[in-house]
Image (tube, rainbow, N blue to C red; front, side, top):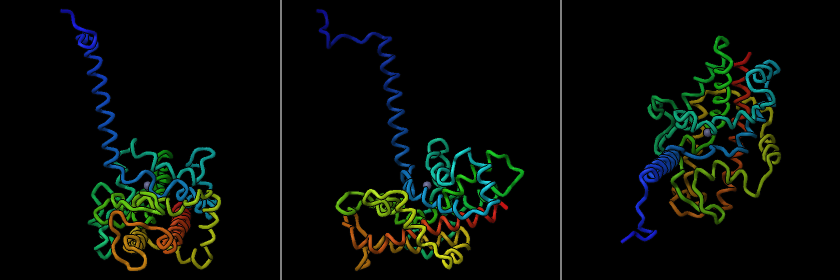
Length: 287
Ligand SMILES: [Zn+2]
């Protein structure tokens, strides 16, 4: 009896082809799964937050620092553009993924080097890339890379849940509702609070730069990556709590106006501080 069309045995060459396709498909699925496991969040501050911080920093550069930045970056590339580069490299430079944050348990009293793995974290990478940027004997490409990483990491360090953690990858695993929409704590801080209501980039820039008074800018232009991490840490301890009764947030909690009223101004101020501080670092480094 001849086999019916559905029972027809697959010719050997076709079987090989199918096996290859299956292998390729499983590799794609595996690498996607790995990316999901290792990527802490898609963007850290959203693209808008990073751009605003970069633009603010650029507006505060001394003429000398501005010229050096222009020489290092590509023609037409602004510091706002450069702010996004590190998030786009997580696949090309996989070892850089853990450099965007440090996990300090919110039950601790603050940052301690033991929370920074030997392979580096956001606190150790800032001074490291600053040294490379300052080294005029290093090649242009190496210094440009250092500038892009430094720019991004100063911004990430100011995002409270890039420092504070409650065994949930900085709130990535803490599922919440925000204004009726399912999300997680990390996303709320990365962009959902800052960008709610289809906010324009220019509006966010205006809100953030309005916070930079001469007194604040003088006060903010100081400190180290460790001190800035500790500021973020204290804020993260608060960010993990419900406004009002102050209890720790639990999966499924519904956040909205009260949370925004408490923390939106904090998020904007963190962006403002990171812009002022990046300019301060670059002005001091590129003399
Ligand atoms: Zn990042």
